[in-house]
Length: 72
Image (cartoon, rainbow, N blue to C red; front, side):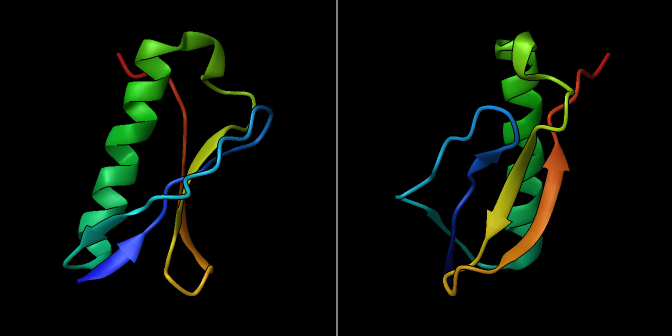
C-alpha cells in the first residue's frame, strides 16, 4: 500500500497532511473524484473557478487532479 494526499488547490487551498493508504493509484484517483464531488455538493461556492482536488504521492509528486464541479 502507498500513501496518497488530497489537497484542495486553486483559490482556497487546503493542505492534506495526513494522507490515506491505497492499494493502487486507480483507487486513489477514484477517491479524489469522490472528494471533489463532495466538496462541490457540500460547499457550492468552491465549485468551478479553477479549483481542484489533487492526488499527491509519497514522493510529493502530483499524479492527478480533478476539478471541483457541480454534478447534476
